[in-house]
Image (tube, rainbow, N blue to C red; front, side, top):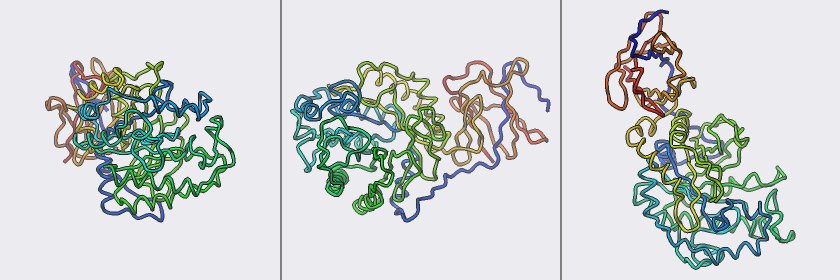
Length: 447
């Protein structure tokens, strides 16, 4: 096929046939979500960016959220950190505004991590932010209200494994914390979790529960009683979304699927080899390399890297849950704030090409990826140099079996010339210079 192009143009040929505009939603067997739950799922998918916060008394050690286990500390000594936890610079409104300005749609906070410390007021024990620290303020309560005030949805991470409670059955981790081995009672522990999740769902504006720790059991036959747990949660709040970071296909009762440190279908970190199911999808990925605050971890992804990660996530019909580990004084790391600001500047222009979009049938290309809304396709050219050269321009050829109403440069709205050939191709000319980085977006309006 031969096409002439100007010296100041890149010619792009795109395949647009057979693209589904609506993501298929299929639930596991034995669970029928309510109308309100399905609406919550749709809202979850429409806002592609979430902020993940790993924060607890472990931040005082500045060695990440696993320090009780990785440092081989005795729990009897570790718990004393609570008496010194006083994040005097914490400002929930300041945090929520930073997340909103970054273009996020929701926030997920660790309500209780593997160390068993609760970041909310709970009746189950004094080992919580209100009763067990001199700070005596309900961090989860303040942050959830501030997020809702900014129009952000608020979700709660909740660990189902516990290195602190004596009744938690011993698993793969937390074996050096000094807990006795004859006090385990999962029925007791299960009842404890039911009390806590009821507190989260009735005392706070929590729209989803994000579970972690299912992978802790050596014995694959161990019965976590998850379907029963999920049914209990949905009986309290039917529209509450449930996800579980178990690294397997969704279990009955779950409402979304997550992938850790990788986008769906990728497994570079070795944690997300499971198949992609039919539920809404989320990829949780750290901004640097650590989940909880780590004073020695300055390996932050650049703003451009985060933008490309968000774009690629959306192209896979997935949300991106971008993690930050707050400092023990209650401030977000300076590096994180800088990246939130840069991300927000980009989202002010390009959010419509991310939020409310779905994937297309166009596979990942060397030059980038695609997203779609009803009647429109967005071409995210992440690597313009990857387009094959053709004289003084570049050309990418793919078969096309649909009709285009218009083609524009998304940022400026400037029309771009295009031509469909008789042999089933369309050529779209894009300026060869001045392309926005890290993502040059072309909008195609379909007839």
